[in-house]
Length: 352
Image 1 (tube, rainbow, N blue to C red):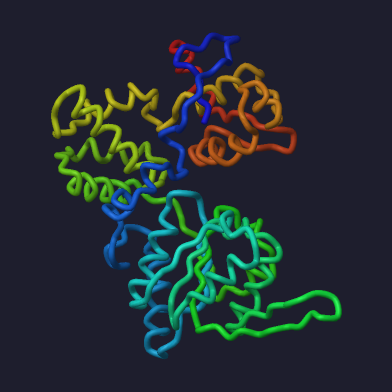
Image 2 (cartoon, helix red, strand yellow):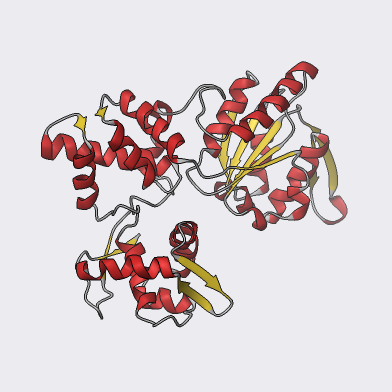
């Protein structure tokens, strides 16, 4: 991932290469390790913080399925990365007292891959497919009959020797997760009985998540420090916990303490070039470039070329938060800073 150098001149858009932006909501290898995933993961819907409306809906659907002794309807969860789609899939399986099998759509390359997954399921089990919008067409078509009729139709042989074989499947629940709902084909989307959006979290919810995690990793976190961490976490638990881990590193290495004050949090985040709005160097570089264009709408490709970065990365990982906090607007002619965004970046010019 690319972010700019901490010393930027008016005409200097060179930047350093980093493996990760701390405020990027994508998962990183450290967070994929089993211990890091499980330590902060709740074991029931009741323990899951936030998403109250979604939890209420799921609670009714799960209890109804248990009452009827049927698998839960196929469920589609969509929203930005890092909001808890995978955690909710595990919780649904736990609440149903069933095993959850996990797959990632990009890893399901051939039809036989999905067939193997489906044949390995047992009655009532949950199959969770992450990034389900990235399934290829042939794999997706096999899922149609599996989801609707709990069977798969396989064509064996070729030409005149071709024959169709039907394999019955146990009744199961498919949970799909996606960050791009519009990229899922209508036939697949229509086969989900439950479709729910996962919203961004409030400051109070994020603060509680941060406090709970700080206890698990033996940190003494002051209340003001936890709230200010929540405010810059972009409404995303994954970012909140990642920032807390980096603050812990700074506290233990630089200050040799497990007591986290608000002053220490500010110093730690400053060392990572993250400011009081939760913006990092790349966010500020993006805004700085727009500010030089004197309120003229600028196309995304032009911005990406100037920053030397990928336009899709800017569109999906940088712009949504800038729009959310009112710093950026999209127009038919291009991107523009709002008055609030311009005021913010003007206040930062002395640091560039």
